[in-house]
Length: 609
View 1: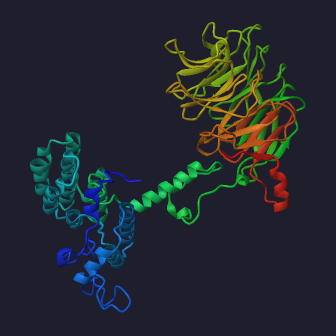
View 2: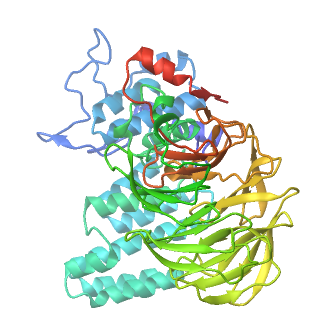
View 3: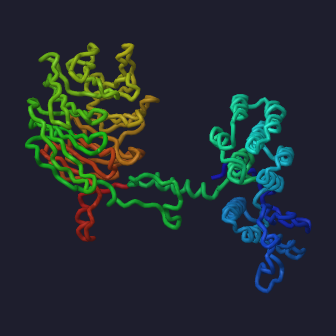
Protein backbone atom coordinates (compact mmCIF):
# COMPACT_ATOMS: atom_id res chain seq x y z
CA UNK A 1 0.00 0.00 0.00
CA UNK A 2 2.54 2.56 -1.19
CA UNK A 3 1.65 5.80 -2.89
CA UNK A 4 3.16 8.82 -4.59
CA UNK A 5 5.85 6.87 -6.42
CA UNK A 6 6.59 4.33 -3.70
CA UNK A 7 8.56 1.26 -4.57
CA UNK A 8 11.49 2.94 -6.29
CA UNK A 9 13.56 -0.19 -5.75
CA UNK A 10 17.28 0.48 -5.51
CA UNK A 11 16.87 4.25 -5.43
CA UNK A 12 14.40 4.05 -2.55
CA UNK A 13 16.64 1.70 -0.60
CA UNK A 14 19.66 3.95 -1.04
CA UNK A 15 17.69 7.01 0.04
CA UNK A 16 15.84 5.60 3.01
CA UNK A 17 18.28 3.21 4.65
CA UNK A 18 21.69 4.80 5.11
CA UNK A 19 23.71 4.75 8.28
CA UNK A 20 22.87 7.94 10.13
CA UNK A 21 26.54 8.29 11.15
CA UNK A 22 28.04 7.54 7.74
CA UNK A 23 31.77 8.35 7.35
CA UNK A 24 32.00 8.98 11.07
CA UNK A 25 30.21 12.35 10.80
CA UNK A 26 26.99 13.33 12.50
CA UNK A 27 24.12 13.57 10.05
CA UNK A 28 22.69 16.58 11.87
CA UNK A 29 24.00 19.80 13.23
CA UNK A 30 22.81 22.34 15.77
CA UNK A 31 19.30 21.51 16.97
CA UNK A 32 18.57 18.56 14.65
CA UNK A 33 18.36 14.92 15.60
CA UNK A 34 20.26 12.07 14.03
CA UNK A 35 16.94 11.22 12.37
CA UNK A 36 17.21 14.51 10.51
CA UNK A 37 14.27 16.27 12.19
CA UNK A 38 14.21 19.36 14.35
CA UNK A 39 14.07 18.84 18.10
CA UNK A 40 13.12 21.02 21.02
CA UNK A 41 15.77 21.92 23.59
CA UNK A 42 15.92 21.11 27.26
CA UNK A 43 17.76 23.66 29.48
CA UNK A 44 19.74 24.77 26.47
CA UNK A 45 20.84 21.27 25.56
CA UNK A 46 19.55 19.36 22.58
CA UNK A 47 16.96 16.74 23.55
CA UNK A 48 18.64 14.53 20.97
CA UNK A 49 21.45 13.93 23.47
CA UNK A 50 20.74 10.99 25.70
CA UNK A 51 22.51 12.32 28.84
CA UNK A 52 24.26 9.05 29.37
CA UNK A 53 21.41 6.73 28.37
CA UNK A 54 23.07 3.65 27.01
CA UNK A 55 22.20 1.91 23.78
CA UNK A 56 22.44 -1.47 25.44
CA UNK A 57 23.30 -3.20 28.71
CA UNK A 58 26.69 -2.18 30.03
CA UNK A 59 27.32 0.35 27.30
CA UNK A 60 28.30 3.89 28.16
CA UNK A 61 27.79 5.21 24.65
CA UNK A 62 25.15 7.90 24.06
CA UNK A 63 22.10 6.77 22.09
CA UNK A 64 22.66 9.44 19.49
CA UNK A 65 26.44 9.69 19.51
CA UNK A 66 28.45 9.02 16.37
CA UNK A 67 28.73 5.30 15.75
CA UNK A 68 32.20 3.88 16.30
CA UNK A 69 33.98 1.80 13.70
CA UNK A 70 33.18 -1.42 15.53
CA UNK A 71 29.50 -0.44 15.69
CA UNK A 72 29.43 0.26 11.98
CA UNK A 73 30.98 -3.12 11.42
CA UNK A 74 28.42 -4.83 13.58
CA UNK A 75 25.60 -3.11 11.68
CA UNK A 76 27.02 -4.33 8.39
CA UNK A 77 27.07 -7.88 9.70
CA UNK A 78 23.39 -7.69 10.56
CA UNK A 79 20.84 -9.09 8.18
CA UNK A 80 19.92 -6.50 5.55
CA UNK A 81 16.39 -5.24 6.03
CA UNK A 82 13.88 -5.84 3.28
CA UNK A 83 12.14 -2.92 1.61
CA UNK A 84 8.92 -3.70 3.51
CA UNK A 85 10.79 -3.80 6.83
CA UNK A 86 12.45 -0.46 6.10
CA UNK A 87 9.06 1.04 5.21
CA UNK A 88 7.56 -0.16 8.50
CA UNK A 89 10.45 1.30 10.50
CA UNK A 90 10.08 4.65 8.76
CA UNK A 91 6.31 4.65 9.33
CA UNK A 92 6.79 3.91 13.02
CA UNK A 93 9.48 6.58 13.25
CA UNK A 94 7.26 9.18 11.64
CA UNK A 95 4.41 8.35 14.02
CA UNK A 96 6.68 8.51 17.09
CA UNK A 97 8.09 11.82 15.91
CA UNK A 98 4.54 13.16 15.63
CA UNK A 99 4.03 12.18 19.27
CA UNK A 100 7.18 14.08 20.28
CA UNK A 101 9.18 10.93 21.16
CA UNK A 102 12.28 12.17 19.35
CA UNK A 103 14.89 10.34 21.43
CA UNK A 104 13.10 7.07 20.74
CA UNK A 105 13.12 7.90 17.02
CA UNK A 106 16.86 8.61 17.16
CA UNK A 107 17.56 5.25 18.76
CA UNK A 108 15.28 3.43 16.31
CA UNK A 109 16.93 5.00 13.28
CA UNK A 110 20.44 4.40 14.58
CA UNK A 111 19.89 0.78 15.52
CA UNK A 112 18.08 -0.04 12.24
CA UNK A 113 20.48 1.92 10.03
CA UNK A 114 17.53 3.72 8.42
CA UNK A 115 16.53 7.35 8.26
CA UNK A 116 13.14 8.96 8.03
CA UNK A 117 13.81 11.13 5.01
CA UNK A 118 16.45 12.46 2.65
CA UNK A 119 18.74 15.16 4.17
CA UNK A 120 17.62 17.66 1.52
CA UNK A 121 13.99 17.03 2.48
CA UNK A 122 14.84 17.53 6.17
CA UNK A 123 16.53 20.83 5.42
CA UNK A 124 13.55 21.88 3.30
CA UNK A 125 11.11 20.96 6.08
CA UNK A 126 13.04 22.95 8.67
CA UNK A 127 13.24 26.05 6.49
CA UNK A 128 9.51 25.94 5.76
CA UNK A 129 8.60 25.58 9.43
CA UNK A 130 10.95 28.46 10.35
CA UNK A 131 9.52 30.69 7.59
CA UNK A 132 12.88 31.07 5.84
CA UNK A 133 11.31 31.26 2.39
CA UNK A 134 14.42 32.14 0.35
CA UNK A 135 16.31 29.18 1.79
CA UNK A 136 13.31 26.89 1.25
CA UNK A 137 13.17 28.04 -2.38
CA UNK A 138 16.87 27.20 -2.80
CA UNK A 139 16.21 23.77 -1.27
CA UNK A 140 13.85 23.06 -4.15
CA UNK A 141 16.81 23.08 -6.52
CA UNK A 142 18.41 20.26 -4.52
CA UNK A 143 15.15 18.32 -4.49
CA UNK A 144 14.62 18.72 -8.24
CA UNK A 145 16.89 15.77 -9.06
CA UNK A 146 14.94 13.51 -6.71
CA UNK A 147 11.54 14.28 -8.23
CA UNK A 148 9.78 12.55 -11.10
CA UNK A 149 7.71 15.47 -12.39
CA UNK A 150 9.47 18.65 -13.59
CA UNK A 151 6.22 20.61 -13.26
CA UNK A 152 6.08 19.77 -9.54
CA UNK A 153 8.83 22.32 -8.77
CA UNK A 154 6.72 25.15 -10.19
CA UNK A 155 3.69 24.09 -8.15
CA UNK A 156 5.74 23.79 -4.98
CA UNK A 157 7.35 27.17 -5.56
CA UNK A 158 3.90 28.70 -6.06
CA UNK A 159 2.69 27.29 -2.74
CA UNK A 160 5.78 28.61 -0.94
CA UNK A 161 5.43 32.10 -2.41
CA UNK A 162 1.71 32.16 -1.65
CA UNK A 163 2.44 31.52 2.04
CA UNK A 164 5.22 34.14 1.97
CA UNK A 165 2.82 36.68 0.41
CA UNK A 166 0.07 36.04 2.95
CA UNK A 167 2.45 36.31 5.90
CA UNK A 168 3.77 39.65 4.61
CA UNK A 169 0.20 40.92 4.29
CA UNK A 170 -0.70 39.79 7.80
CA UNK A 171 2.37 41.59 9.18
CA UNK A 172 1.29 44.77 7.39
CA UNK A 173 4.25 44.68 4.99
CA UNK A 174 2.19 45.62 1.94
CA UNK A 175 5.10 46.71 -0.25
CA UNK A 176 6.99 43.48 0.36
CA UNK A 177 3.82 41.49 -0.34
CA UNK A 178 3.27 43.43 -3.58
CA UNK A 179 6.83 42.67 -4.63
CA UNK A 180 6.24 38.92 -4.06
CA UNK A 181 3.04 39.09 -6.08
CA UNK A 182 4.49 41.01 -9.03
CA UNK A 183 8.11 39.94 -9.02
CA UNK A 184 7.91 36.30 -7.94
CA UNK A 185 4.41 34.78 -8.25
CA UNK A 186 3.29 36.38 -11.54
CA UNK A 187 6.48 35.44 -13.51
CA UNK A 188 5.80 31.78 -12.75
CA UNK A 189 2.85 32.00 -15.21
CA UNK A 190 1.04 29.40 -13.16
CA UNK A 191 -2.56 29.46 -11.87
CA UNK A 192 -3.33 33.00 -12.95
CA UNK A 193 -6.86 32.73 -11.56
CA UNK A 194 -5.45 32.18 -8.10
CA UNK A 195 -3.08 35.14 -8.53
CA UNK A 196 -6.08 37.38 -9.25
CA UNK A 197 -7.69 36.14 -6.04
CA UNK A 198 -4.49 36.76 -4.09
CA UNK A 199 -4.24 40.31 -5.44
CA UNK A 200 -7.69 41.01 -4.02
CA UNK A 201 -6.39 40.36 -0.51
CA UNK A 202 -4.37 43.61 -0.76
CA UNK A 203 -7.64 45.39 -0.03
CA UNK A 204 -8.10 43.69 3.34
CA UNK A 205 -8.20 46.32 6.09
CA UNK A 206 -6.88 44.17 8.92
CA UNK A 207 -5.41 40.74 9.66
CA UNK A 208 -8.70 39.18 10.77
CA UNK A 209 -10.30 40.20 7.48
CA UNK A 210 -7.42 38.63 5.55
CA UNK A 211 -7.60 35.33 7.43
CA UNK A 212 -11.36 35.14 6.94
CA UNK A 213 -11.31 35.88 3.21
CA UNK A 214 -8.32 33.66 2.50
CA UNK A 215 -9.66 30.88 4.77
CA UNK A 216 -6.17 30.78 6.26
CA UNK A 217 -5.04 30.11 9.84
CA UNK A 218 -2.54 32.98 9.82
CA UNK A 219 1.21 33.06 10.22
CA UNK A 220 2.50 30.28 12.44
CA UNK A 221 2.88 26.56 12.96
CA UNK A 222 -0.65 25.57 11.92
CA UNK A 223 -0.60 27.15 8.47
CA UNK A 224 2.99 26.05 7.81
CA UNK A 225 2.17 22.46 8.76
CA UNK A 226 -0.76 22.58 6.35
CA UNK A 227 1.59 23.97 3.70
CA UNK A 228 4.06 21.14 4.31
CA UNK A 229 1.28 18.58 3.90
CA UNK A 230 0.55 20.02 0.46
CA UNK A 231 4.23 20.19 -0.50
CA UNK A 232 4.86 16.58 0.55
CA UNK A 233 2.38 15.33 -2.05
CA UNK A 234 4.85 16.33 -4.78
CA UNK A 235 7.80 14.46 -3.26
CA UNK A 236 8.38 10.70 -3.67
CA UNK A 237 7.85 8.81 -0.37
CA UNK A 238 11.46 7.63 -0.54
CA UNK A 239 12.45 11.28 -0.09
CA UNK A 240 9.78 12.40 2.38
CA UNK A 241 6.94 10.32 3.78
CA UNK A 242 3.39 11.51 3.13
CA UNK A 243 1.94 13.15 6.27
CA UNK A 244 0.59 10.84 8.96
CA UNK A 245 1.11 7.85 6.70
CA UNK A 246 0.72 5.19 9.41
CA UNK A 247 -2.62 6.64 10.54
CA UNK A 248 -3.78 6.70 6.92
CA UNK A 249 -2.93 3.03 6.42
CA UNK A 250 -4.61 2.02 9.68
CA UNK A 251 -7.73 3.99 8.79
CA UNK A 252 -7.85 2.33 5.36
CA UNK A 253 -7.54 -1.08 6.99
CA UNK A 254 -10.41 -0.33 9.37
CA UNK A 255 -12.59 0.95 6.52
CA UNK A 256 -11.82 -2.14 4.43
CA UNK A 257 -12.82 -4.44 7.29
CA UNK A 258 -16.05 -2.51 7.71
CA UNK A 259 -16.75 -2.67 3.98
CA UNK A 260 -16.29 -6.45 4.05
CA UNK A 261 -18.45 -6.88 7.13
CA UNK A 262 -21.72 -8.43 5.95
CA UNK A 263 -23.79 -6.99 8.79
CA UNK A 264 -22.25 -3.54 9.30
CA UNK A 265 -25.27 -1.24 9.48
CA UNK A 266 -24.18 1.86 11.38
CA UNK A 267 -22.64 5.17 10.43
CA UNK A 268 -18.94 4.93 9.69
CA UNK A 269 -16.66 6.86 12.05
CA UNK A 270 -13.36 7.68 10.33
CA UNK A 271 -11.64 8.34 13.65
CA UNK A 272 -9.28 5.60 14.84
CA UNK A 273 -10.15 6.53 18.43
CA UNK A 274 -13.57 4.89 18.03
CA UNK A 275 -12.21 1.40 17.30
CA UNK A 276 -9.73 -1.08 18.72
CA UNK A 277 -6.79 -1.80 16.45
CA UNK A 278 -6.12 -5.00 18.40
CA UNK A 279 -9.21 -6.83 17.08
CA UNK A 280 -10.74 -7.40 13.68
CA UNK A 281 -14.01 -5.60 13.01
CA UNK A 282 -17.00 -7.95 13.29
CA UNK A 283 -20.70 -7.07 13.50
CA UNK A 284 -22.98 -9.69 15.00
CA UNK A 285 -26.05 -10.92 13.16
CA UNK A 286 -27.97 -10.16 16.35
CA UNK A 287 -27.47 -6.44 15.63
CA UNK A 288 -29.15 -6.82 12.24
CA UNK A 289 -32.92 -6.50 11.57
CA UNK A 290 -33.67 -10.20 11.05
CA UNK A 291 -35.76 -10.89 14.15
CA UNK A 292 -39.53 -10.42 14.36
CA UNK A 293 -40.22 -7.58 16.79
CA UNK A 294 -43.91 -7.13 16.07
CA UNK A 295 -46.70 -8.76 14.06
CA UNK A 296 -49.42 -6.37 12.92
CA UNK A 297 -52.71 -8.20 12.41
CA UNK A 298 -55.22 -5.35 12.00
CA UNK A 299 -55.78 -6.03 8.29
CA UNK A 300 -58.38 -8.70 7.60
CA UNK A 301 -57.19 -9.78 4.14
CA UNK A 302 -54.03 -9.98 2.02
CA UNK A 303 -51.60 -7.08 2.60
CA UNK A 304 -50.26 -5.98 -0.77
CA UNK A 305 -47.99 -3.07 0.04
CA UNK A 306 -46.11 -1.30 2.84
CA UNK A 307 -43.99 1.82 2.85
CA UNK A 308 -42.26 3.85 5.56
CA UNK A 309 -42.57 7.64 5.33
CA UNK A 310 -39.53 9.59 4.18
CA UNK A 311 -38.77 10.75 7.73
CA UNK A 312 -39.21 7.21 9.10
CA UNK A 313 -41.85 8.20 11.67
CA UNK A 314 -44.78 6.38 10.03
CA UNK A 315 -45.59 3.21 8.11
CA UNK A 316 -48.44 2.94 5.60
CA UNK A 317 -49.86 -0.47 4.69
CA UNK A 318 -52.37 -1.22 1.93
CA UNK A 319 -54.59 -4.30 1.77
CA UNK A 320 -57.11 -6.20 -0.27
CA UNK A 321 -59.52 -5.42 2.59
CA UNK A 322 -60.00 -1.91 1.00
CA UNK A 323 -58.16 -0.05 3.75
CA UNK A 324 -54.91 1.82 4.26
CA UNK A 325 -53.57 1.82 7.82
CA UNK A 326 -51.13 4.48 9.03
CA UNK A 327 -48.85 3.33 11.85
CA UNK A 328 -46.83 5.58 14.15
CA UNK A 329 -43.22 4.52 14.89
CA UNK A 330 -42.17 5.09 18.50
CA UNK A 331 -38.77 6.87 18.31
CA UNK A 332 -37.45 5.08 21.42
CA UNK A 333 -38.83 1.53 21.37
CA UNK A 334 -39.37 1.40 17.58
CA UNK A 335 -42.74 -0.23 18.25
CA UNK A 336 -45.56 0.55 15.81
CA UNK A 337 -48.94 1.81 16.97
CA UNK A 338 -52.07 2.22 14.82
CA UNK A 339 -52.55 5.92 14.10
CA UNK A 340 -55.53 5.94 11.72
CA UNK A 341 -57.34 3.86 9.10
CA UNK A 342 -58.19 5.26 5.64
CA UNK A 343 -61.16 3.44 4.18
CA UNK A 344 -63.16 3.18 0.96
CA UNK A 345 -60.72 1.78 -1.61
CA UNK A 346 -63.22 -0.56 -3.24
CA UNK A 347 -60.68 -2.49 -5.31
CA UNK A 348 -58.11 -2.83 -2.55
CA UNK A 349 -54.76 -1.01 -2.26
CA UNK A 350 -51.77 -2.37 -4.15
CA UNK A 351 -49.44 0.67 -4.20
CA UNK A 352 -48.71 3.65 -1.93
CA UNK A 353 -46.55 6.74 -2.35
CA UNK A 354 -45.67 9.34 0.30
CA UNK A 355 -45.26 12.97 -0.78
CA UNK A 356 -41.72 14.35 -0.31
CA UNK A 357 -42.73 16.14 2.91
CA UNK A 358 -44.90 13.21 4.11
CA UNK A 359 -48.01 15.42 4.25
CA UNK A 360 -49.91 13.41 1.64
CA UNK A 361 -50.25 9.75 0.71
CA UNK A 362 -51.49 8.48 -2.66
CA UNK A 363 -53.13 5.05 -2.87
CA UNK A 364 -53.58 3.01 -6.07
CA UNK A 365 -55.46 -0.22 -6.71
CA UNK A 366 -54.91 -3.35 -8.85
CA UNK A 367 -55.22 -3.59 -12.66
CA UNK A 368 -59.00 -3.15 -12.84
CA UNK A 369 -58.98 -0.01 -10.66
CA UNK A 370 -59.51 3.32 -12.47
CA UNK A 371 -59.35 5.47 -9.32
CA UNK A 372 -56.59 7.09 -7.31
CA UNK A 373 -56.92 8.46 -3.75
CA UNK A 374 -54.86 11.37 -2.38
CA UNK A 375 -55.07 11.54 1.41
CA UNK A 376 -53.93 14.18 3.88
CA UNK A 377 -52.15 11.94 6.37
CA UNK A 378 -52.11 14.45 9.21
CA UNK A 379 -55.87 15.13 9.15
CA UNK A 380 -57.05 11.81 7.70
CA UNK A 381 -59.10 13.70 5.10
CA UNK A 382 -59.42 12.68 1.45
CA UNK A 383 -58.16 15.62 -0.60
CA UNK A 384 -58.64 14.16 -4.08
CA UNK A 385 -60.28 11.12 -5.61
CA UNK A 386 -59.16 11.08 -9.22
CA UNK A 387 -60.53 9.13 -12.16
CA UNK A 388 -60.20 10.26 -15.76
CA UNK A 389 -62.22 7.37 -17.21
CA UNK A 390 -63.85 4.21 -15.92
CA UNK A 391 -61.79 2.29 -18.48
CA UNK A 392 -58.49 3.55 -17.07
CA UNK A 393 -56.09 1.48 -15.04
CA UNK A 394 -54.18 3.54 -12.48
CA UNK A 395 -51.93 1.07 -10.68
CA UNK A 396 -48.75 3.04 -10.03
CA UNK A 397 -47.82 6.55 -8.94
CA UNK A 398 -44.72 8.68 -8.25
CA UNK A 399 -44.32 12.14 -6.76
CA UNK A 400 -42.41 14.94 -8.43
CA UNK A 401 -39.68 16.20 -6.04
CA UNK A 402 -41.44 19.58 -5.79
CA UNK A 403 -44.37 17.88 -3.99
CA UNK A 404 -46.87 19.75 -6.17
CA UNK A 405 -47.28 17.20 -8.96
CA UNK A 406 -47.39 13.47 -9.46
CA UNK A 407 -47.42 11.00 -12.34
CA UNK A 408 -49.66 7.96 -12.55
CA UNK A 409 -50.45 5.24 -15.06
CA UNK A 410 -51.34 1.64 -15.73
CA UNK A 411 -51.19 -1.22 -18.21
CA UNK A 412 -54.12 -0.03 -20.30
CA UNK A 413 -52.08 2.79 -21.80
CA UNK A 414 -52.69 5.65 -19.37
CA UNK A 415 -49.75 7.87 -18.39
CA UNK A 416 -50.73 11.17 -16.73
CA UNK A 417 -49.10 14.06 -14.90
CA UNK A 418 -51.50 15.74 -12.43
CA UNK A 419 -51.62 18.41 -9.73
CA UNK A 420 -52.76 17.87 -6.14
CA UNK A 421 -56.38 18.44 -7.08
CA UNK A 422 -56.26 15.69 -9.68
CA UNK A 423 -56.25 18.11 -12.64
CA UNK A 424 -54.57 16.66 -15.72
CA UNK A 425 -51.43 18.66 -16.59
CA UNK A 426 -49.89 16.39 -19.27
CA UNK A 427 -50.39 12.96 -20.73
CA UNK A 428 -48.31 10.53 -22.74
CA UNK A 429 -50.17 8.35 -25.18
CA UNK A 430 -49.65 4.65 -25.71
CA UNK A 431 -47.39 3.80 -22.75
CA UNK A 432 -48.51 0.70 -20.84
CA UNK A 433 -47.07 1.48 -17.43
CA UNK A 434 -46.13 -1.17 -14.88
CA UNK A 435 -44.19 0.97 -12.38
CA UNK A 436 -43.09 4.64 -12.08
CA UNK A 437 -40.34 6.71 -10.46
CA UNK A 438 -39.49 10.45 -10.60
CA UNK A 439 -35.81 11.36 -10.60
CA UNK A 440 -34.45 14.19 -8.45
CA UNK A 441 -33.92 16.48 -11.47
CA UNK A 442 -37.68 17.15 -11.41
CA UNK A 443 -38.00 16.49 -15.14
CA UNK A 444 -37.29 12.83 -15.81
CA UNK A 445 -39.87 10.13 -15.10
CA UNK A 446 -38.80 6.49 -15.28
CA UNK A 447 -41.47 4.04 -16.35
CA UNK A 448 -41.31 0.28 -16.76
CA UNK A 449 -43.67 -0.97 -19.45
CA UNK A 450 -45.02 -4.15 -21.03
CA UNK A 451 -42.03 -4.30 -23.41
CA UNK A 452 -39.74 -5.49 -20.59
CA UNK A 453 -37.88 -2.18 -20.40
CA UNK A 454 -37.50 1.02 -18.40
CA UNK A 455 -37.59 4.26 -20.35
CA UNK A 456 -36.98 7.83 -19.29
CA UNK A 457 -39.70 10.35 -20.16
CA UNK A 458 -39.37 14.14 -20.09
CA UNK A 459 -42.78 15.83 -19.90
CA UNK A 460 -41.26 19.28 -20.59
CA UNK A 461 -39.72 18.66 -23.99
CA UNK A 462 -41.66 15.43 -24.72
CA UNK A 463 -38.56 13.32 -25.27
CA UNK A 464 -37.98 9.73 -24.18
CA UNK A 465 -35.08 7.30 -24.21
CA UNK A 466 -34.41 3.66 -23.43
CA UNK A 467 -32.45 3.04 -20.20
CA UNK A 468 -32.96 -0.61 -19.20
CA UNK A 469 -33.86 -3.59 -21.34
CA UNK A 470 -34.63 -6.95 -19.73
CA UNK A 471 -35.56 -10.27 -21.35
CA UNK A 472 -38.52 -10.88 -19.04
CA UNK A 473 -41.33 -8.69 -17.63
CA UNK A 474 -40.31 -6.08 -15.05
CA UNK A 475 -42.89 -6.52 -12.27
CA UNK A 476 -41.66 -3.57 -10.19
CA UNK A 477 -38.61 -1.41 -9.61
CA UNK A 478 -37.25 1.14 -7.15
CA UNK A 479 -34.38 3.64 -7.35
CA UNK A 480 -31.62 4.46 -4.85
CA UNK A 481 -31.58 7.86 -3.12
CA UNK A 482 -28.77 9.15 -5.31
CA UNK A 483 -30.63 8.13 -8.47
CA UNK A 484 -27.75 6.00 -9.71
CA UNK A 485 -29.02 2.44 -9.12
CA UNK A 486 -32.30 0.72 -9.89
CA UNK A 487 -33.54 -2.47 -8.23
CA UNK A 488 -35.80 -4.58 -10.42
CA UNK A 489 -38.03 -7.54 -9.60
CA UNK A 490 -38.07 -9.48 -12.88
CA UNK A 491 -40.60 -12.22 -13.58
CA UNK A 492 -39.12 -15.76 -13.23
CA UNK A 493 -35.66 -14.22 -12.76
CA UNK A 494 -35.61 -12.57 -9.34
CA UNK A 495 -33.94 -9.33 -8.25
CA UNK A 496 -31.61 -7.45 -10.60
CA UNK A 497 -29.45 -4.37 -9.88
CA UNK A 498 -28.91 -1.90 -12.73
CA UNK A 499 -26.65 1.13 -13.05
CA UNK A 500 -28.90 3.78 -14.62
CA UNK A 501 -26.02 6.07 -15.56
CA UNK A 502 -23.93 3.45 -17.35
CA UNK A 503 -27.06 1.49 -18.37
CA UNK A 504 -25.56 -1.85 -17.41
CA UNK A 505 -26.73 -4.81 -15.34
CA UNK A 506 -24.57 -4.82 -12.21
CA UNK A 507 -25.73 -7.92 -10.32
CA UNK A 508 -28.31 -10.69 -10.17
CA UNK A 509 -29.26 -11.65 -6.61
CA UNK A 510 -29.84 -15.31 -5.90
CA UNK A 511 -32.27 -17.21 -3.71
CA UNK A 512 -35.57 -15.38 -4.14
CA UNK A 513 -38.57 -17.12 -5.76
CA UNK A 514 -40.18 -14.73 -8.25
CA UNK A 515 -42.90 -15.83 -10.64
CA UNK A 516 -45.48 -13.47 -12.12
CA UNK A 517 -46.70 -11.95 -8.85
CA UNK A 518 -45.85 -8.30 -8.29
CA UNK A 519 -43.24 -8.23 -5.52
CA UNK A 520 -41.60 -5.01 -4.32
CA UNK A 521 -37.99 -4.97 -3.13
CA UNK A 522 -36.09 -2.07 -1.53
CA UNK A 523 -32.72 -0.55 -0.74
CA UNK A 524 -32.03 -0.09 2.96
CA UNK A 525 -29.71 0.09 5.90
CA UNK A 526 -27.08 2.71 6.49
CA UNK A 527 -25.90 4.21 3.20
CA UNK A 528 -28.36 1.86 1.45
CA UNK A 529 -25.75 -0.90 1.64
CA UNK A 530 -28.42 -3.64 1.75
CA UNK A 531 -31.21 -4.96 -0.42
CA UNK A 532 -34.35 -6.74 0.78
CA UNK A 533 -37.11 -8.46 -1.17
CA UNK A 534 -40.20 -10.52 -0.57
CA UNK A 535 -40.59 -13.91 -2.21
CA UNK A 536 -43.22 -16.42 -3.26
CA UNK A 537 -41.65 -19.00 -0.93
CA UNK A 538 -42.99 -16.98 2.06
CA UNK A 539 -39.56 -15.59 3.03
CA UNK A 540 -37.87 -12.21 3.17
CA UNK A 541 -34.40 -12.22 1.60
CA UNK A 542 -31.62 -9.78 2.49
CA UNK A 543 -28.42 -9.26 0.52
CA UNK A 544 -25.43 -7.01 0.96
CA UNK A 545 -25.49 -4.85 -2.14
CA UNK A 546 -22.11 -6.17 -3.33
CA UNK A 547 -22.88 -9.86 -2.80
CA UNK A 548 -25.14 -12.05 -4.95
CA UNK A 549 -25.81 -14.58 -2.19
CA UNK A 550 -28.28 -13.67 0.58
CA UNK A 551 -26.86 -12.91 4.01
CA UNK A 552 -30.19 -13.68 5.68
CA UNK A 553 -33.48 -15.44 4.96
CA UNK A 554 -36.27 -14.36 7.29
CA UNK A 555 -39.05 -16.84 7.99
CA UNK A 556 -42.36 -16.30 9.72
CA UNK A 557 -44.85 -15.41 7.00
CA UNK A 558 -47.05 -18.28 5.80
CA UNK A 559 -47.86 -17.01 2.30
CA UNK A 560 -46.21 -14.89 -0.43
CA UNK A 561 -44.38 -11.82 0.86
CA UNK A 562 -45.49 -9.01 -1.47
CA UNK A 563 -43.47 -6.05 -0.27
CA UNK A 564 -40.56 -5.09 1.98
CA UNK A 565 -39.81 -1.56 3.23
CA UNK A 566 -36.69 -0.50 5.14
CA UNK A 567 -36.99 2.45 7.47
CA UNK A 568 -34.93 5.32 5.96
CA UNK A 569 -34.20 6.91 9.35
CA UNK A 570 -33.72 3.80 11.51
CA UNK A 571 -31.30 1.39 9.76
CA UNK A 572 -32.25 -1.46 12.10
CA UNK A 573 -35.99 -1.40 11.32
CA UNK A 574 -37.77 -3.12 8.43
CA UNK A 575 -41.35 -4.15 7.58
CA UNK A 576 -42.79 -6.84 5.30
CA UNK A 577 -46.34 -7.32 3.98
CA UNK A 578 -47.78 -10.71 3.06
CA UNK A 579 -50.78 -12.49 1.59
CA UNK A 580 -51.14 -14.10 5.02
CA UNK A 581 -52.81 -10.85 6.14
CA UNK A 582 -50.02 -9.72 8.45
CA UNK A 583 -47.29 -7.12 8.49
CA UNK A 584 -44.10 -8.20 10.25
CA UNK A 585 -41.76 -5.66 11.78
CA UNK A 586 -38.13 -6.79 11.86
CA UNK A 587 -35.36 -5.52 14.11
CA UNK A 588 -32.22 -6.58 16.01
CA UNK A 589 -32.36 -9.44 18.50
CA UNK A 590 -33.97 -8.47 21.80
CA UNK A 591 -31.95 -8.69 25.00
CA UNK A 592 -32.53 -12.32 25.95
CA UNK A 593 -30.52 -14.96 27.74
CA UNK A 594 -28.37 -17.13 25.51
CA UNK A 595 -30.78 -20.10 25.42
CA UNK A 596 -33.71 -17.98 24.25
CA UNK A 597 -31.51 -16.19 21.72
CA UNK A 598 -30.42 -19.52 20.22
CA UNK A 599 -34.05 -20.49 19.67
CA UNK A 600 -34.73 -17.11 18.08
CA UNK A 601 -31.76 -17.56 15.77
CA UNK A 602 -33.56 -20.35 13.97
CA UNK A 603 -35.79 -17.70 12.39
CA UNK A 604 -32.80 -16.15 10.68
CA UNK A 605 -30.88 -18.50 8.39
CA UNK A 606 -27.47 -16.98 7.88
CA UNK A 607 -25.82 -17.64 4.53
CA UNK A 608 -22.43 -15.94 4.78
CA UNK A 609 -20.48 -15.99 1.59
